[in-house]
Length: 71
Image: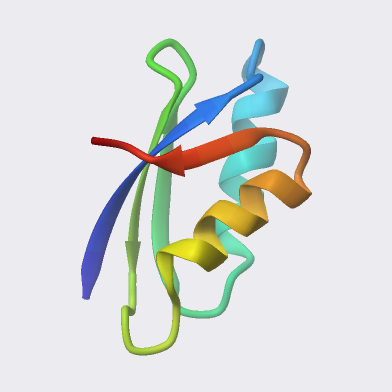
Protein backbone atom coordinates (compact mmCIF):
# COMPACT_ATOMS: atom_id res chain seq x y z
CA UNK A 1 0.00 0.00 0.00
CA UNK A 2 1.14 3.53 -0.77
CA UNK A 3 -0.07 7.02 0.02
CA UNK A 4 0.13 9.96 -2.37
CA UNK A 5 -0.56 13.60 -1.68
CA UNK A 6 -1.78 15.54 -4.71
CA UNK A 7 -2.30 19.26 -5.30
CA UNK A 8 -5.66 19.92 -6.94
CA UNK A 9 -6.49 23.24 -8.57
CA UNK A 10 -9.86 24.52 -9.69
CA UNK A 11 -12.06 23.27 -6.84
CA UNK A 12 -14.39 25.93 -5.48
CA UNK A 13 -17.17 24.09 -3.62
CA UNK A 14 -18.27 20.90 -1.95
CA UNK A 15 -19.52 19.51 -5.26
CA UNK A 16 -16.02 19.92 -6.72
CA UNK A 17 -14.55 18.15 -3.71
CA UNK A 18 -16.99 15.24 -4.06
CA UNK A 19 -16.33 14.99 -7.81
CA UNK A 20 -12.57 14.63 -7.22
CA UNK A 21 -13.13 12.05 -4.47
CA UNK A 22 -15.43 10.02 -6.74
CA UNK A 23 -12.95 10.19 -9.62
CA UNK A 24 -10.17 8.84 -7.42
CA UNK A 25 -12.15 6.13 -5.65
CA UNK A 26 -13.50 4.88 -8.98
CA UNK A 27 -10.00 3.63 -9.83
CA UNK A 28 -9.59 -0.06 -9.10
CA UNK A 29 -6.86 -0.34 -6.48
CA UNK A 30 -7.63 2.91 -4.69
CA UNK A 31 -8.57 2.20 -1.08
CA UNK A 32 -9.50 5.72 0.01
CA UNK A 33 -9.30 9.34 -1.09
CA UNK A 34 -9.69 12.33 1.21
CA UNK A 35 -9.94 15.70 -0.53
CA UNK A 36 -9.35 18.92 1.40
CA UNK A 37 -11.18 21.71 -0.44
CA UNK A 38 -9.64 24.55 1.58
CA UNK A 39 -6.04 23.39 1.13
CA UNK A 40 -6.54 22.11 -2.41
CA UNK A 41 -5.05 18.72 -1.62
CA UNK A 42 -6.03 15.09 -1.95
CA UNK A 43 -4.52 12.26 0.06
CA UNK A 44 -4.94 8.88 -1.59
CA UNK A 45 -4.23 5.40 -0.22
CA UNK A 46 -3.77 2.92 -3.05
CA UNK A 47 -2.23 -0.35 -4.14
CA UNK A 48 0.99 0.72 -5.82
CA UNK A 49 1.24 -2.68 -7.55
CA UNK A 50 -1.80 -1.87 -9.67
CA UNK A 51 -2.13 1.95 -9.66
CA UNK A 52 0.40 4.64 -10.53
CA UNK A 53 0.44 8.23 -9.38
CA UNK A 54 0.07 9.22 -13.03
CA UNK A 55 -3.26 7.39 -13.12
CA UNK A 56 -4.38 9.32 -10.04
CA UNK A 57 -3.45 12.64 -11.64
CA UNK A 58 -5.11 11.62 -14.93
CA UNK A 59 -8.37 10.78 -13.14
CA UNK A 60 -8.49 14.25 -11.59
CA UNK A 61 -7.71 15.91 -14.93
CA UNK A 62 -10.45 13.89 -16.65
CA UNK A 63 -12.83 15.13 -13.93
CA UNK A 64 -12.04 18.70 -15.01
CA UNK A 65 -9.40 19.87 -12.52
CA UNK A 66 -5.66 20.46 -12.64
CA UNK A 67 -3.53 18.13 -10.52
CA UNK A 68 0.07 17.27 -9.71
CA UNK A 69 2.00 15.45 -7.03
CA UNK A 70 2.46 17.64 -3.96
CA UNK A 71 5.94 18.39 -2.72
